[in-house]
Image (cartoon, rainbow, N blue to C red):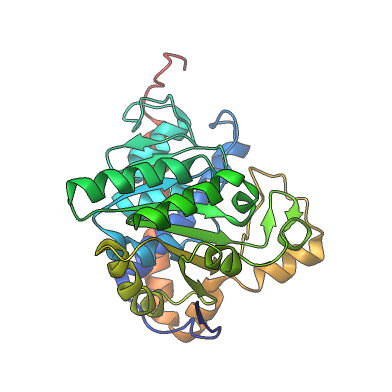
Length: 304
């Protein structure tokens, strides 16, 4: 088991990396606004506070097949940068990546698949990993899970087989301390590290939000998995700044305020104010323009 400590959150990152993380932040904020204005049907789950994770991982895991979950917009955007296609999908407009049929949670394109059913993507990702292993195409399968997903027995069945087959599978755990409305400590006994260890699976925990440090820490473990050294579980101890979905935040106001103090953007802006404000303004305007353009498109169902 490898654990990285807290505190390394303010190391400088490139405009490109910061811009992608802030693009995801403003995309998600805009999406909540569009939900409130009635432009989005059904539900949606944002990754506010967790944007740095897929941004840090994107260059490390490529080439990869990414399996995502209900809170997967950031995973998709970090891999493809396709804000227009994703927003069109969620709002049911022309240019939607899945023709408007998948909505917020169920996105598919080559190299990416998301679903709202917790746990089911872990064995599917294992299947993709074994396929790549047999083809020797150099790809890893990466599956994003939450802390709540680790209450599903299918996760452990998949880990067992993955280790036996030495499959090129990376399981990412975005542990934000709460599964919908249930604090992790009330639903999970033991630790994710110990559960990985039970199968002999390598484990790495990240307790900070520094993109540059994350990449330094995880480059070698991911490459070991790609080279045939078996699966890897990476746990990010992170924070969910927004509600579970749309506006249904059941946490007490004091808890929400406490979580907000852990927003990674606060520490980064304090250390690099000029860069942060410049890049943040650019990405905010970019998302505003994107949303305005997408909402001008006709709906895929023919309604106005």
